[in-house]
Amino acid sequence: MGFRKKGFSASQTKRTSRRMSDSMIGSHVERSASRGRHAAGRPDAGTSKVDFSDGRRSRRATRGYVDQVDPQATSGESDADFARRTSRRGYVEQIQSQARKRRLAAGVVIAVAVVAVAVFAGVSAYFFFSDSQLSLGDSNAKDALTAPAEGEPYYALCTASLGTAVEPDAAAGEAYLVVRIDEAARVLTFVSVPPQIMVSLSDGQVHPLSDARAVGGDAELIDQVEELLGVEIAHFARTDADGLARLVDLAGGVPVLVSEEVDDPRAGIQVIKAGEQVLDADQALTLLRASNFADGLEAQAKNRAAFTVNLAGRATSGEGLSFASIIGDGASAVSTDWSSAQLIALGDALRPLAEATVYASVVPGRLAETDGALSYEVFGEELESMMEAVRAGNAPESAEGNVANMDRATVSVEVRNGSGIQGAAARCGELLTTDGYAVEGVGNVDDGTAYPETLVIYRGEENELAAKAVVSDLSAGRVVNGGDFYSFNTDVLVIIGQDWISAA
Image (cartoon, rainbow, N blue to C red; front, side):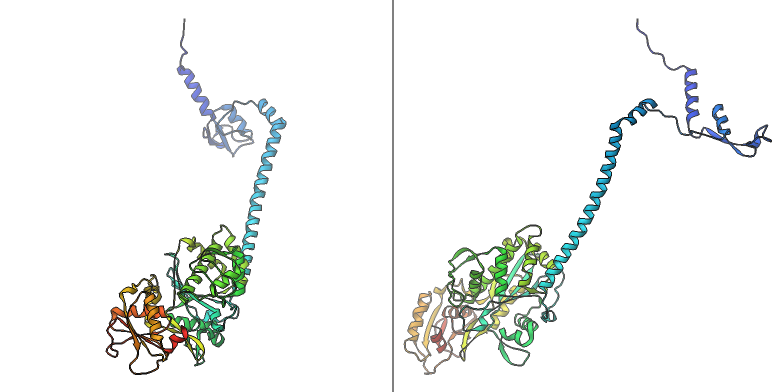
């Protein structure tokens, strides 16, 4: 027969409640000894007395010791079991192992801190050394630089003394690239500035731009470029042929898409085939010097821009400290106001450079020979139009860029010989016909004058671009708005001068 376990009785409940009260903190109260009937004459007379609801505990407290006032609580482990557990060897080894782990953890933390400090000090020293190598030294370039506005595009002037293999014009060995850098939009716009541009320097004399450093240092060069292009230069960098060769070697070669075969004896003995090429140091210098292309200085400007971007892209393509290492190793090859940290930040902002937008152009104008020396005549209106586009962050609108896509077949041309050389008009007419123009007549000028320069004359704004295209294709000539001063029935009139005979 089954039975049920009975619940607690009333007496059991009271006993349990009383025992719990005896064990709780606060179940004792303080009583003054003076309240006791036999207080006088007792050792504890006049002192405070701790009283418990349990009489035995009260008597022990009166004798001067209270050994427990917290709740009574026991675990499932007896004192004997606890003693046996703590006396075992494994327990001791566990305590020792935990102590070793704590000491090891503390040691690791200290070691990491020491290494972090050492790395920071090493990196700081590394960058300090790189910055000292990059320094402009005694250059006065910083006197002419203008700090850019925060977050806005800015301009940098990059110069290189390339040297020449066999080049009668010493100025041709200088390369000047102004770069508009828009980090936010990741757009780079290169403007090649021919060193043969004639400028008035601080000595009051007219010189080619390549003489600026000799007259007034890097600051003079920066000032002249700023005045020419109408921009403020924020950064400056300078290198030479040896420095470029070192940078190419550090990058392991520079990949460049060569649009036209490079075969210029004045630039170097290397012949570089058209197509994708990885250039070594000698080939790179040849590419940068070469100018005997169908588009002349325009093609040279594009080659220089592509090389610069691809060299930077090669250097920044690695991860971690690889770019910093290249900066450190190549610092002696470049002088600049940029610090190592600024260059790394610039590389990070533009990375990957292969996906950045890159424009390239040359200051519009033409090379001309005067008194046996080459000079570069700037087309002022075209330059202003181009720089408006550059400052706005758009593709440069140079004369060469505009005329490249013009339909020559829609342009009618008349050619007259003013050079004094028999057959010049017929020869020029044949060349223009080959280029696609509609040549409607050739002949001689009526006044018998010998013209020193070729004039390409147009009437009406709609024919200005056609005249510029003729100048570009002839590699000679000056564009003239004829107005009512010249009589002709075609879109363009070409009067051949002695300069075209020399160029041809």
